[in-house]
Amino acid sequence: DAGITQSPRHKVTETGTPVTLRCHQTENHRYMYWYRQDPGHGLRLIHYSYGVKDTDKGEVSDGYSVSRSKTEDFLLTLESATSSQTSVYFCAISERRQGMNTEAFFGQGTRLTVV
Amino acid sequence: AQSVSQHNHHVILSEAASLELGCNYSYGGTVNLFWYVQYPGQHLQLLLKYFSGDPLVKGIKGFEAEFIKSKFSFNLRKPSVQWSDTAEYFCAVSSEAGSYQLTFGKGTKLSVIP
Image 1 (cartoon, rainbow over the protein chains, first blue to last red):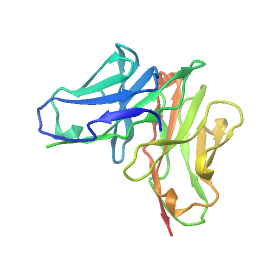
Image 2: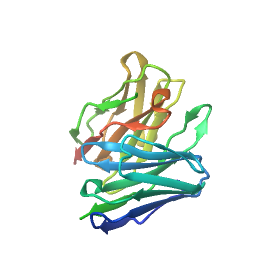
Image 3: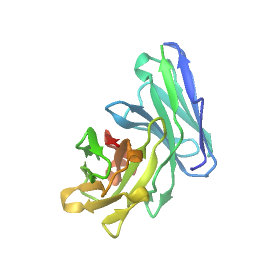
């Protein structure tokens, strides 16, 4: 398995509180991603990063922000958690070769429950 | 924009039956295509990938997929499934239309009955 660690693995939080999820990689890959997985929706991209301090929005970015101050760390923050953000969050990494992104490798996931 | 459609939401098969899961994508240009598997309670793992070359791609655990450009399809096949193949399967596409990010289908849940 690729060296990707997500923390925490499980979290229960209250509506309106801020939450930060962390993704740490040891592969030195350029690209890092945050996805959420919900039944019937597959995986949807929240935000991604293509380098230190370089980030962009994905399909479902509202209510989320990200930061990448080091190559190995990519943080996802829910500024004010809502029940609709209850989900399983996956971090992924990939590289860029010959103008295309390689396959993505996924972390173990973080199960977030907002009550 | 790029998109992926997986035709089957839930497939139920008996052991030793043959499997084919459908996947269609929307973009007409150069694409990279992937199949991932997610076993219950686990993260996604890569089954196989297509970047270029031979359109018949072989992956791990006896899975294969065929890229048919004229049909915008990348169907996953296995000649004989096992109980241990019970999992959810996701097709994904990467292309210029999606800024080379992965777009996933909604997934197909496979249940294999012993």
